[in-house]
Length: 481
Image 1 (spheres, rainbow, N blue to C red):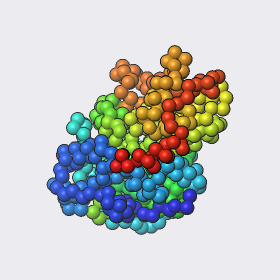
Image 2 (cartoon, one colour):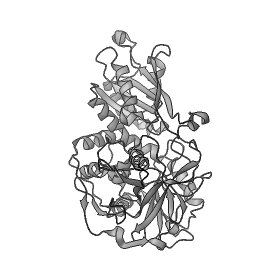
Image 3 (spheres, rainbow, N blue to C red):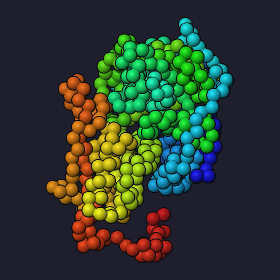
Image 4 (cartoon, helix red, strand yellow):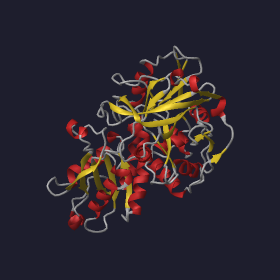
């Protein structure tokens, strides 16, 4: 792709969002309730603006919280360096092409950067110097990490990973570190803990939107998000070496917490309203991070992205990010003629996947559905995969369910997969199974294509031809204005 990511950090991104007329600034909202209430309202409203909260009572002016940063196609296009006005599927396809054509570029180490404008160590460490909101009414505490990404390194293979794992504040010098089993950061953490060693961690609380999106995305094991995002940007990200952990810290980040998670320092974490729309994971003992240093820019910005009941901001942008990667993994597995893929917002881009194919052979639809459900992008906490013909718009939930209702047969069109990869966040796993670590669920693969053996005899769809549709719009389109 020829398009470049025009901004260099979160602040330049916000300037572009402001120029596009999609940024609001609010003064005087409280961290205790107001910011969380507003975020929920914005997340549940399509087309809502990004909002930057300033002058938060109890905190210095300039200590800000940003919410709803990626809730529109325009802002997501800015974040990924793509043109405006492509439409839903067009933007997803453009993102897919950009990802496919990008080559990994490792980060560049530098000695200085805005993140070093303020460095607090030892007794000066105070995570609560920032206006961390209480995001949901029934949360067990204040979560500084919602729009954050947590950096770890594999102790054996020495590759750097970061992912968006929730981070709750315990006290001035400790935060929690919750990661679902199977995630790359959890694999890193468990390797340290198995050896009874502390796990080095850097929590980036406000950072570059492209790096944040990378942390939300299921990249292949062993590929660093820094390298991947550098390739998408077209140039390396600048990083500094953390004083205590040696981890690469973004030089242009807003806030970074550096420290160590300890295997033998466990306390009650949660509950937290999660991306499934439930408090499904409850509260239980989780490792704490001992914060050794806090780095922040002058007038720092917390990037907040608290999950709410879908469809919310997380469901919106993840649909655009995960869908092209799912299509790419399916193609690498050898599935031919995949026309479109979409992780639906109603299932927060995970629980309901749709795949459109041009049928080429008997069993093609079920093959596509099974691969979609079990490849890396589709495997974690899925539920339903629906495979349709290429004449169905997979991004349109009405069209998708019309295909299910008219082209599938409940007795013969559904395959069930048992004991698939899930998580404590899954509301459908019983409390007893969660207690015993049975973190698996089942998947339904629904073949909603025309039956292959008589697809040419399937009744014709009652829609106008393209020629008639164009004539209709030309003649009668004024009625829609």
